[in-house]
Image (cartoon, rainbow, N blue to C red; front, side, top):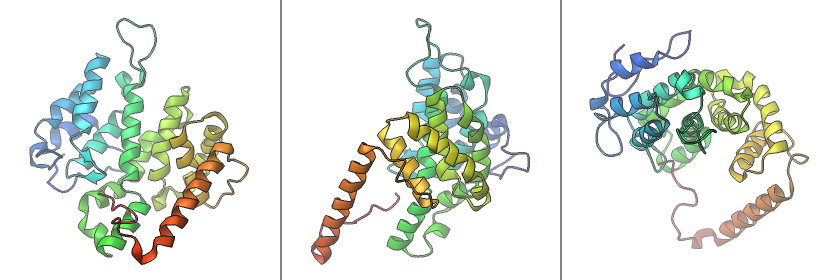
Length: 267
């Protein structure tokens, strides 16, 4: 499998390419990253499957920080996302991270880190970001932002790797998978799977106090046409009311607002 500077070969009907194909068949050195080009990415990505959890942690930091910065997608972002999705079910990822001196898993497993990165990347390419970009840069925004467009096209393939973790025995993994699945499910081909996500969303809201997770889930349910009134707790209502006040205050500034964009462009 070969790639050029702008795109990675799309997966076939059986799903994602094999991770080794992606690693060996991508011209990483030709792809733009945060700090230059991706010469160092193959080694860092390969270390994500190292037996040592400390090495995997360093590799995740080294690889992922090179392809995402301030909500921006780079040429290397899409092939890295495909590689991450392709290794999610590798035994060294699913087995969890166990330190040599501890009997239990580390604070945040490699699996959760990778799911969280896929989630952040998917939100950086979601419909809201496209709408903001079009308001600021015109209707040709997505056509010209080829990296975002390529990622959005591949959301069904990435979703197929994330979906099995929605029922994981670990709540941390389940919630990380749901955070990734929600923005990926904006793809029209995945609309029929949102019913499953609604069930998982209800489960999260019944058990989690995590502010970020709750906000994302409630926003998704509302966007999908569900009544969230009975699902909100006291903290949720307080946050919603505070945001409404801030929006009203900003709107009241009208033409006098001089603080720049009222909403940040997606990069």
